Length: 309
Image 1 (cartoon, one colour):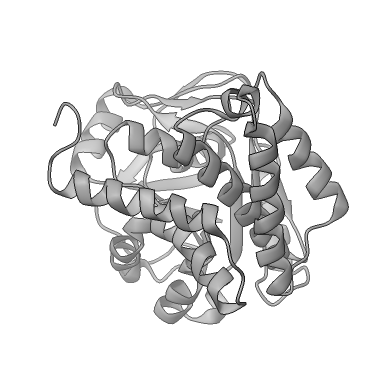
Image 2: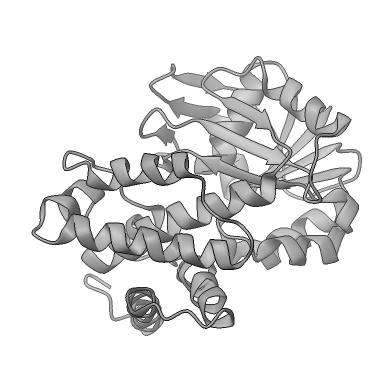
């Protein structure tokens, strides 16, 4: 299976790099500056599961002949990613973007039959020196057919990942449910860590913080249930424990982007949830406040008025 990975940043560099390390036929579609750096230094990964320094194949423009395209961009870069991938017309497109709204755009661009559902659970970042740094032991990539069930092709993708170090890949029959579960998890973390500008444990240690986070989790679960995706009891128990952990350093990539003065996925996560709540007539003041916070931040960023800017 020939694989085209769009980007060699945190997610693309990690999952694509682990595939390449395992001997898969992987090509990275990257910008010229990243291509030059990868040619000179290779792809470098630091991880609890072992570091790697790999020579990798790159292209700066896509061509045909790929069986699978792994789409790992930020949600706000989706339009550019679609344009970059169009010449390749890959047999399958596997997006692991945050949110859900990208699915319809990808189906319109490539055809519903070519688009899988997918999600990644990993904390990683691209360091200034070009190294992909995995920040904890999260290493999951999950995917499936959007209309449900298992298929030969999702099984083949799982088999492709099977020998990769530091990756747990699973083909599932209910990927839409799994994507809603991630939206509830991510929406809760984003509302709390972005509003409070703090990691989960720092919020939990503050008086009233744990109760606030539990209320946000329940509200997000209610939004998902109203759209036909109730959260399983085991899921709710897992994330109640996560958000009660006073020692946790977990924070969202949205918070890291805001603190770094970069574009955020506020509209694609908080905005999506706010619209979903409004469709069902659900009132959710904390979500509305978090979305307003993210929008005001983007306005300030666009005006060049961030600290140090």
